[in-house]
Length: 608
Image (cartoon, rainbow, N blue to C red; front, side, top):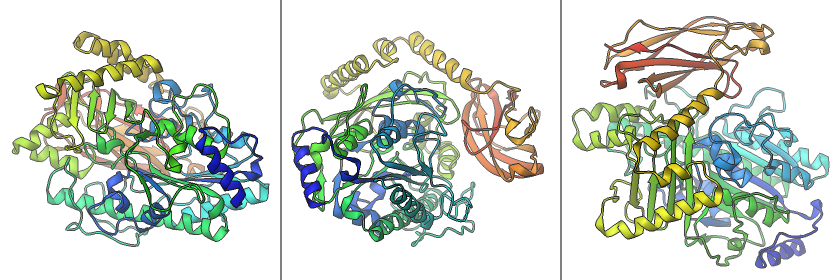
């Protein structure tokens, strides 16, 4: 094995994939991701709260940390598909949360399986490939050995899944490629109810943080409601770390640690305002760690090179000695694992297109060591961005305080409406609080960033190129966004279409919504979910979305469990100021939108 690793190390120096290695002579691959975790929530990445991540910190001490690593996208399915395709979203076509059948390119699972690896995945199965189920996974690890479903918040179950994957590879006589996606700290946070209250939670982390412990990120604001939610978040961070500990313990016990490349990262930042579903610094900064015994040096830190998710697949292929497929946008940074330097690592490009509900709020960004430039063609002063964080107690508190606090009101307005262009000095203002777009001292650098972004759009065939070139023309921006919104709407199931064939009852109506005739601004509105599920469907999730305005922009979403026949009341807080004085509701039943069995959209309801 020492000879094999030495050979791999030597090959890295010449920037080439290792040629002609048999599968049995290649290292195993273990990818561990956490869901919605900001980089600075981890001790090894300068978390200000002690004790959040002892297991991840230990992994970092044994491997190489990249301090300037970013993902491309601030939400899950598009972000993960960049990682495992090596292509930007506008090229892999996974711009939102929908299926892309026959994508026309291979992803990590294909390439590893074709190279003789045993491929297995736990959690985020439908979000990790262009469509699902995906044939290149030899084993999906979502079930426990007794056949029951593993709970995504059960930290120990991720160790069980890892053990199953290693055993499956051993039985097949192949090296393993395991992608273990830990569900924390994605909402729901540990012991947190939708209204922010603390509730019983059987999946207790090894340490529970109290509301007086967490530091408040600079992009938020000091408030007891925020502190309480952050305590739930950091307890979930610790639970994710518990899961990482179980995974690494199983790997150690298997005797495969010395022959396994371990890669750790988060898919994007924390699910709170100004992080998730954005392109700010803390939205995309990921805690990237590699450990490959004999190649990476323990405790090594790369704080010079900027790498991003589009580079992950070509890098892994080089490290494992596999040929690159044609058409990837990314570039391997394998030499950096040896401590070498690499030119052209002084900026990354980022993009956002669509949220989980199909709402289009397209953005592009270029991020350097010093500056971050963001272009938001959807911003017109009226349109409200549909983010994934408006349902949080922190956001609701921000909306409440915005009525009386001038600074929070300005932040709330930016959160909802943004501006067409933003420029931040992330070297001194990583929280992106001061827009320097009109700063005379930054005009030369701004011009360079705009030019770099345009060149990238040309080089990668970005469909936003023309609107970026006409960014000062509101009509061009509106036409572009309208076109993309129309395409997103066309992908949704048409009203009246049913997907109940899986229930053996084709055309059946599994859920319906009962809504009030009108709602009152600043009050609570309740919608009733009527459900009629046959026994074989068991317990299902119903996702109810509260929307505002003519554009039906998402304001809040709540997820409830239903079974059998009955009804369930779901309540939402109505904002004091509602766009167009209209609200509406949508709902779907299933674990996620792409695989939903039924989708409903109500007509607009007036706000009094």
